[in-house]
Image (cartoon, rainbow over all chains, first blue to last red):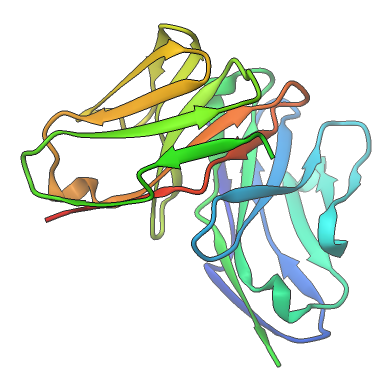
Length: 114
Length: 112
């Protein structure tokens, strides 16, 4: 069965430090992969997506993620954290065009310390 | 932004009462979804729709029903609300490219 794991339900970084949020998926075929961000009291919005065009994907707000098939990973990074990055981050996977097979990870809450 | 609105945004109700949540979209997207969000569980799919009057169950559909009589509206009904249905409910649609989802602002439902 398809699943998504996010290591660390809470991550704290200092302002200006590297942000690394981990996502691993289980899939027998190359999936579509997404990172979403949720700010307090808001819905989710797309940060970036992998669709097999390139393994290194750049998203909004300086975030990027690298698809590594051998590790079944899609970790999210940002070189320098900003206070405004504090939010909940969700990794999601879709297998092919199965719209009913959107699987979200449990989420990682990112705190940024001044 | 897919122009998704949800109503109401907040609701408090009592156990055993029926509740209907509304999702409205302006982008003419074919697919629409209802999720619930609970701490430690991420988002879990309740029901989804792939067209007018075409709906199917998600992983946590028990106690919920949906209807879609128009492309732009997707209703979620709790026939008899229970305390376990206290949650934040999100509606979403799918864009036309690479299955990207667009989310509404959410409805916070409390069942006492």
